[in-house]
Image (tube, rainbow, N blue to C red; front, side, top):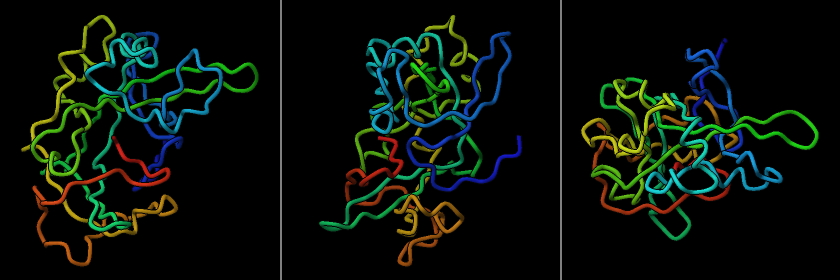
Length: 221
């Protein structure tokens, strides 16, 4: 599979996941971001189901079956969050591993079979209470798995609730980036450009608190 770089994935768009295949091996697939439960009548709520709350994911009807049987890894090398700086202004922030290595979010996937048409496979990202680096902006943070936990997360025979935890703050740093990323029409390296007034080094604890972005922007919360 010849994947092209993505810089700004939006809800309902396809993104890569790694999951268990029927023979027990791992497989790489492109699924749509925004989970549609297998029992849903339609896909109308897909753009609102991009996240699964970790504390209740094991018993919420929309996610519990996927949590037990259809967990996946969602590879990435960064994610965005937004900081409200004025009444109608949001400053985007880019969170990455300090060593700039790729990582994997804890994900859930589901297969939805419509009355007519093609089968739709979708996923959501699990989040939990914020760690220290995220707390100034939001009370939630995506679950980033340690590589040593990948196998356990993918194995449906294992109760994975203990893996639903915030990543250590020391794994991450954040940097203010250009508002170019605020438009889902932009999906190129310009999304990672530092904000004009950004400090030259990544910052860990900006002062202001964030609220969610507007429209279909891919906030993880």
